[in-house]
Length: 205
Image (cartoon, rainbow, N blue to C red):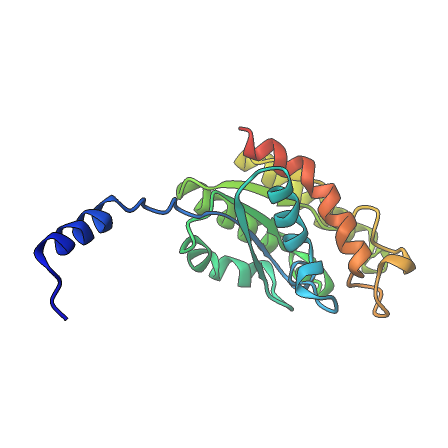
């Protein structure tokens, strides 16, 4: 169908003058099944809860849940380039639980976490690192060495640390599913509450 000349001119002007949509602001939660929200609804996992809270507080961010069940720090390291495709402003790095459960060498964990953080920093991303612990049945020496990795990586890279992702949740029957490992919806809410002040400080830097 041919438009009259005047109508065509108006159409062109409208198209040119249309506002360009602002680039989406993105936060990524890079983790394992604790981040993926295994056993709870997607909107009950802590990344979705953080997104809802951000929007309530007037922050227009999309929080991408990049949790993969069973993932180790090595797996997370292999996924960093994929994470960067979404051009995140902030990445929450919540890895290490499966390294500990499998008794993997703590030096490998340190190297992987440091490589992840430095790769993200090189891309201009702000990083929040979360700590993890292993149950005492893995032996005191391993448990201490494992827990020490996270503050060491935070110091070496200069990123903030949320000391323990499962603070107030681990070991509490009412906040974990039948496997004793994965948080319930209420446990996920407590994780989001604990991460919130750390995330707030990053967004105001």
